[in-house]
Length: 202
Length: 161
Image (cartoon, rainbow over all chains, first blue to last red):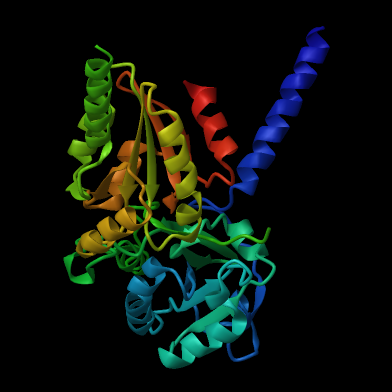
């Protein structure tokens, strides 16, 4: 009986652990590199970005009002931080069957209209969003190159006011990069924000 | 006597109908929200966070509308908390009227989302729709996904009360 019980407990904890892994990356997690197609047709991986100290990985999309509200702020982040070693890697993982505005061709259109200075990748299999544990748009994962590893340093929102960029008084991503560049640990490692759900395939 | 009873019935029905017509959408702070749903009474508060632009939210609204009618005589109160932008309050109100929701609706203007999301539910990743159940001053349940059918919502409500 005791053995059986121990077995059941072991099984339960395995189930629990695998569930926790399914839930995606946490601050401190090591990121596995990936390859996705950019809007220019070329395949991009994290390692293919030259001179990067890290990456501002943003799960975003075309249609979501929150993503739209943050579009110019994402461009501004890239313009400020790509030169400091942290380029934006934007990823759209939405199923275009659910959100037609988020198809690859619409991504190309949007990138051209807004002249995105960063790559805008299409996660058509939704594997990368799942691996990261991204659930909404926009959803940021700040990744730092640390030796051979790519480590998550911050997960969450860009700032604390989606409606009014000027009224935001916490600029989480910018603060985190400034801390990393100053050789300090990131103080605020995780934040919550409202966003649109990633539109999963049915 | 019959006529009197009938007129009384008509009067009561009219009163009920009046009581059911909810006030226009107003702005709600975190404190107002907590005072509204954390009450020491038997009423079950079914609170749905949504927005007019959110596709799955709008899809599940009819389930809330239908169940609010079916549960009209039970101690169950449906509340919609819109996460539309503050300057979209008129559009949100028009949307609720057009859909004939007949459910108490507020526009949640609670400031820093990292503060209020964690205050309401630390496991909430921030996606909507999200639905809460409150009763007797405590949170009974939370679900961060949408209800495909009215039955799913009904099961969620009855499973936790």
